Length: 367
Ligand SMILES: *Cc1c(COP(=O)(O)O)cnc(C)c1O
Image 1 (cartoon, helix red, strand yellow):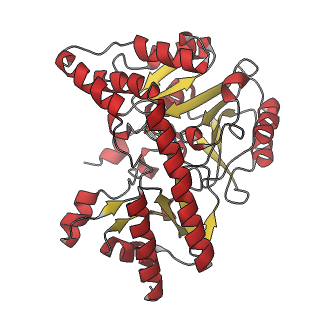
Image 2 (cartoon, rainbow, N blue to C red):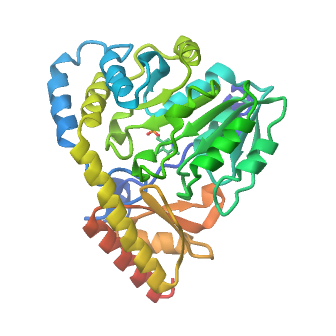
């Protein structure tokens, strides 16, 4: 039986998302131990103390359904961001919410504008909804907003922007973004994916939440998976016009965020010490990689996120494989169209030292 032929249009062209290699898988395959994973932009500090305590407090209630409206977490977010709870929607990771925007608004008649070398989920969702992808060539490995604005047509339903960008770490300034938003027609939705925004310094961070009042077509997307250290629990949120959110809520599954995720995210939001440590560790350790790459004359993309992309200017798969044999898992991004690059998530000090030593060793061996 040809199940693909039974599937919706576009599904035949999809490939499953390729996650970073899990440590257990590598160790099973190579029969090694003590390997490290710097491949999925996870928070190397692990679960924060306040989130952990909240999870423990929530355990006895697990036989019950979660709060379908996420009242407590939304209230905490609303207070922190200075928005109304009606402007917020919670998701099982922000990835689910990106899909929800597509389910709600996108069909095969539509064009979706996004940049070359950006988060692969936009390409996957565009494909699976049978919509047409308008992929705008990157500028210096980041978004070319002028070209993206020019690519909008009558059929464009949605523009997706990632800032800082994944997998390159490039960053758009406030003025670039606000100039762009002013050009986008009101009936075209814009997802501004800010999964890494907490790592950006406050002076540089764009005031996306303030822009919501001016741009009713803007959807700001954030996550607890990165700086808040809750990737395994799956919780993200979007902020937008209350009427846009209420349309999304018609399509959302009622209990899409689980009880532990809701409790942990609320506690993580209140754990400023953890967030500060995550951000300052990231800044210190990013500098370690930059210094090493500079010293070695290796090319890299200047990053505002929690990873750094090394460009070997030749096929990087041999180096990736050799690093695996050293017990260091980084992320090849050939699937993003960057076969010469490896994306390295910033880890703990000893992990980064080990990764750097492994790169040095592998390159010195002429791999
Ligand atoms: C990691 C990441 C996300 C977060 O996904 P979750 O589903 O919230 O874990 C979203 N957007 C980008 C660009 C990312 O890199």
